[in-house]
Length: 363
Ligand SMILES: C[S@@+](CC[C@H](N)C(=O)[O-])C[C@H]1O[C@@H](n2cnc3c(N)ncnc32)[C@H](O)[C@@H]1O
Image (spheres, rainbow, N blue to C red):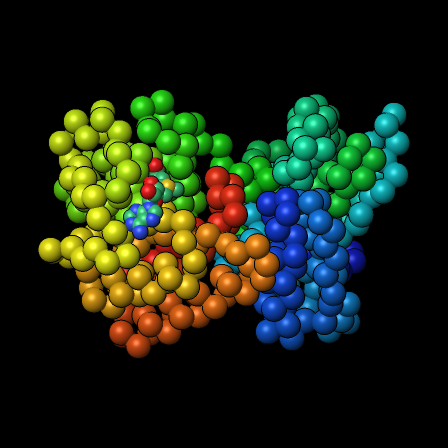
């Protein structure tokens, strides 16, 4: 979709987990270079975001980039926006006027989101953003920049605040942004789940599978293997969908979970374990080298021991983007060689720490 903007949008703002700016920057540099876009990245440690500046005059601006890239193709980016103006001196007594001036002449947007980095300082802006949203929404509607009714068929306006005085003003093209404010899904910890890790698998399914995939691919009566299962947070997610689980771990499993009758616990090595019959899902949360985990997942997929897989790649201290890229290249090559129809989505989820989550789906 070509937007009729008064000025080209020259920055792509990419939100990431604080501490992963370098990886987010390396990834967007690789992707933009492959699209032939001239630009450079600005990334400061621990700021929770990265800026890609488009410098070409060939029309390949931030909106063009957003139209070409899927957010799900970016591992280290949770949310993003194609930004026009950077407002760096908002007067505390009247922030509305400069914001309204900045969007003068813009095409109509269907929603307004005020966001901030996922850092300790950023989180302080939660109330500020909430408070500003109501009058800003009203003023934008009066100016006819924001539609009267929320309209997801129009671009979404984003203000990304760095503090009370500074913000980027930009948009997400239709269907291009994350579905959650700041790219963070708010998931409630299920009180009966045996570990907080349960939220990693819940988030993976919630954010990386479409609604249709979730209904079709996670059905009662299916079978799964959980490698590195103890105490059972991931197994709990499977069991809550009435999926039978073989839980492989030398450690103890949660007693209440075992009483569900849907779990068989095997004290065995996850790297050498082989299932007696193929299963629908392999899930794996073992902390080990990405290359070793990737080898094992490839063996499961190409031996057709499982149809789908979800696993974590624990990241090394350095060259984290490179480690992920290498693992994914190998996984793609193996699936292609096996002649599969498959999809792979990889993300550093909100509930992931020094790791990323990979979902492999066979169609
Ligand atoms: C991060 S914990 C898993 C947490 C689990 N997903 C949950 O939600 O409760 C990693 C687990 O992997 C297990 N583990 C490590 N190496 C393993 C191996 N070679 N085979 C099986 N389990 C292993 C550990 O005993 C540990 O329980």
